[in-house]
Length: 420
Image 1: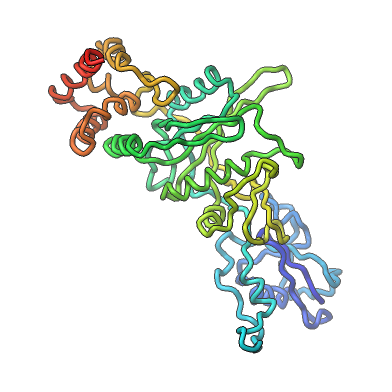
Image 2: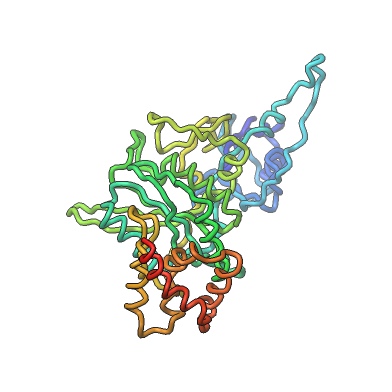
């Protein structure tokens, strides 16, 4: 009798040699040998609800001595299998037989073919425990998109902050917006290596680093004939590429979108995700298709070779398979966000520096310059290896800024304007 064993990793077929005398325990041992999930970690049921996130209602096949004949199973019946995410061995079971096939090599068994399949499964939990956003930074980003762009085109930024080594929670303290061109469906980052080097130097001096990506979704984005979707194939590709580049397991991708109610009112929503580990691996291995056509369904990501997803062989995967939701919250970060933000059309004028410093004359000088966007403007005129670390150390520790740096910054706008 052939039984189909369905799990979140797909469907495997198990042959039960003697179904009349076989027990649940016998089936478990066959599964252990074929599916490579140890018997103690297996949870079996005839109820498909076992594979849902809340599976408490599913009746388990808990008695290993129970005969299979008592379960009303027949040839081709489904048995549902659940197990912890890391329970399945990465090593495939040994093939049953290998036979010579002339000078072209060896004949592959069915076990060999199955072992070579790429299985796309949902990742149960993120590697980032939660993502907390500095309120002022998040508000400045969404206000620009809402008031200046009217959510008509996409906008993106890199998230910078800290990762708590113990809790694996990410704290986003500022958002850097690189040069970019946005449409309803695509935001193309026109990345400036020199500017990014200054951004990273500032972040390093503040005890921070790049921790993620944020982008908006336009209200007129491309729709899918097959239903709603959280992220388009282009967004999945961009987010995956940048997560692979990011180099930290806690990398987070945030989406900002406008949801319009039945009464016509709109609410701005932030959502946070990680791209699953298998998604990043598919990208690194060249399996995830990087060429996307205008006629492609935005809900689906194409593969360059066949994979197993949802229990079937396919060349297209629902984008939702790759998304791992991350809990989101907010906090008040250590920096202010009152200075004009870079790369928003017109260059930030040097007069903005003088105006900003004049408005905050009542504050200590270190408080007046504790704004990433101000530091980025000033850093263009400083030595990135000597001056930027020294200045950002003052901001990080909220210590007195040396008089030389203070005089330099205060005179910078006047000198530059005089030259112009």
